Amino acid sequence: MPKDSGSGPPPANDPAAATKATAPTKAPAGANAPAEPTAPTAPPGRPRRLAWLLGPALVAGVAYLDPGNVASNMTAGARFGYLLVWVVVLGNTMAWLIQYLSAKLGVVTGQSLAETLGRRFRSDTARRAYWLQAELVAMATDIAEVIGGAVAMWLLFGVPLPIGGLMTGAVSIALLLVQQRRGARSFEFVVITLLAVIALGFTYGVFAAPPDAAGVLGGLVPRFEGADSVLLAASILGATIMPHAIYAHSALARDRFAAGDAHPADRGAGIPRLLRATRWDVTIALAIAGTVNLAILLLAAANLAGVPGTDSLEGAYAALDTGLGAVVATLFAVGLLASGLASTAVGAYAGAEIMQGLLRVRVPLITRRLVTLAPAIAILAAGVDPTWALVLSQVVLSFGIPFALVPLVWLTARTDVLGRYRNRWWTTAAGALAAAFLVALNGVLLWLVLAG
Image (cartoon, rainbow, N blue to C red; front, side, top):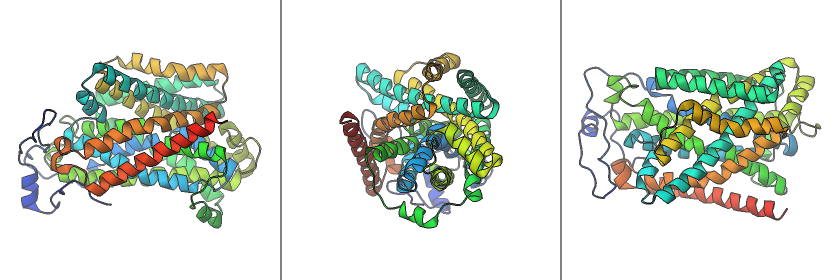
């Protein structure tokens, strides 16, 4: 795992350096410059093991396994076989860097990305306009997650889609109440448990019906086959590198190491140790998310390619039931349900953070949840094809990526924001290249859509 902290954090096993890391430092000059971030002096006692510091990335990683991912990857595999394997791999690689930068911002500054941006806008009009696009992206995220949960409840229990959507929203409120009343650690435990269910549900089928190795290797070669494959590539990237996950991860890292949620010895461990834990956290989370996303595409490519109707979640479930048996199909539906329940809670958390940080207002939890829940319920009640709505929601998310990614790279490269923990030049260059690639892909997609 590459390390990146500007001039570099002191080695974790250097006592003198660790002491220096926890000493107070002066703030850089500049009107917007915060105090040089440092961890508080450690109280008596040894910090707990590194594993205890893991968690925020695993929660944020649920955003990479939401129903939008399932729909995009399943549709890509069913329609184009192994063609877009390279998109999943590329998206996961870029996601590692992006999520680490987001978490680093929260760990070092003690502020989320939305809070940091909100304090830097000089114009209220610009700040509110920025909030509006971020809020629309959050609503598109909610559409994907609620619809996915509703479809899963219909497949498993025959619950009507609008009722299933309401039930999914209700569970998300319950999970957020856990976060508010029991703290970040309890929220993480519940979401990570759902993450384990998601991983089992979506990977079992690949072991039951392994994909073609030659086809997988061929899919690693970057290429497209027509406008529809570009649309699906943008959808996969929008589902993989999600704007709300960028906003959420910085807030989760901030909350995880806040005074009320971290062990006293952990709070005094020093920023270098927290960043080291963050790198491990992001690596584990993205390894899980990338493996599951790839498994979904490979399952569809190996078993659903060319089968009529399998480019929808309902059709895929029926085809899996017919071709691979009830166990594989049921686990797929259970994974989809867990995905909807977990991801809608993380999405609502991100939406609340966006509103608080950019709009600078606190909206009651239930009110905020009902506002973002309404479009998804309306779509379900109108009878719109759920899978197509999921895929299009991911395209909307893809257009929102630059508005979160570009400021993230810019802020983490600044000395007046992160001090000596700012990005190294090659990290900033890699982030800029990722942003440029995503913007270019979205431009091509827009041109293809307008050209019919």
